[in-house]
Image (cartoon, rainbow, N blue to C red):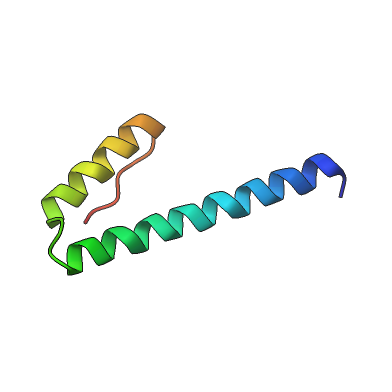
Length: 58
C-alpha cells in the first residue's frame, strides 16, 4: 500500500471508532435516563439529515 492508502485506511478506522464510541455514549445516556428515546431519535435524525444518510431507529 502507498502512503495515501494507509492514510485513508487510518481515517476510515478512526471514523468507525468514533461512530462506535458515539453509539455507546448515546446508549448509556438513554440507560441513565439523561436522554429519552425520542431525544436520541431527534439527534439521529438531525445527523442523518446533515450527512445525507438514512437515520437508524432508536
